[in-house]
Length: 203
Image (cartoon, rainbow, N blue to C red):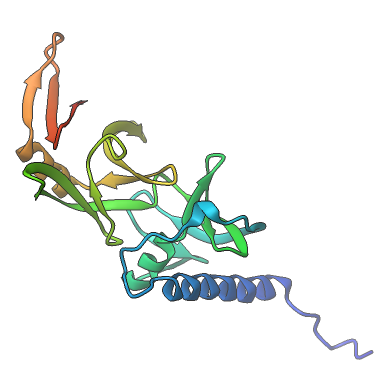
């Protein structure tokens, strides 16, 4: 054996495998669109095997990073968002064949638009995510406040136990749609109505 012959670099092999897994998942999500980008894949019906973790991180500010590199293609993030799964407090990318753990600082979805729509003669609040999810606020999709890094932040329940952070501009639109009240302690309360569903948000 040639003593100068280099052995394979395990770190490089892992990175190549990581890239391949990520592209396979993106391709599966794309193939499963059925011509409709907003269709939800039946992740709850799948029973994939766990395939370890991937060096993919969703930061609290909405950025997606893979192997230390910022993912700039929104279309790619949209595809990954369609196969997000949460189980046991951990986040995964899920296909029928495999489930790979990723790191999420807070929540992996983000609301950037809030407006109102008329449905069957009633006015509903509609929230739109950066990944093109459209969520009608209601009992199944309530808005709520939760603390992160010492700050109260607004969220909405989306799917599979995953929530979306309502970004600042969208939350200002929610305030415009609602009514600001005071509770017995003199604290500000935001009262919102979506159809027949009512909710109140404290600071």
